[in-house]
Image (cartoon, rainbow, N blue to C red; front, side, top):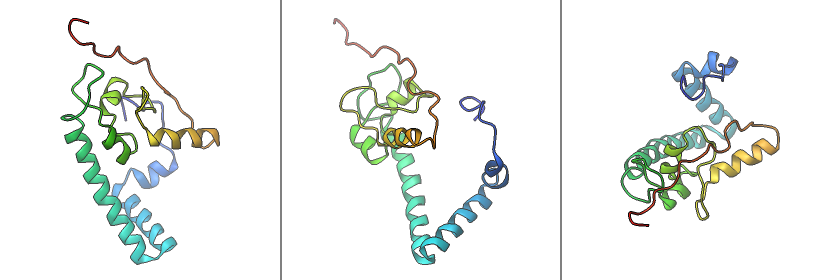
Length: 144
């Protein structure tokens, strides 16, 4: 937060709910259960928990091991991983431009989260601060 979001002051939701992780989590799950019913709400919360922890681990394990490295950093881009993690699998691009809201940079790189961000910004519900920072030059092979 201090490095990438210094200019985003905490709002009332941050101060009251989200700065207290247990309270915010409890309120969120309770609200979900009230809206869709307790069995469905708990099931959805459980699936979200497993997917969140599992996919975060996949991004950090697979996203630093398998895939392409168009930029000079230790992360990799995995197109299949990007599809199932809403663009987070374009990890090499993220490391090259960590403040950019858009992870896709080349033809064929799919970033579903960027599509959602664009729709929200067109509706006036979000504001993109860093659409894409200047990317470092891609790696070139030796002798080219």
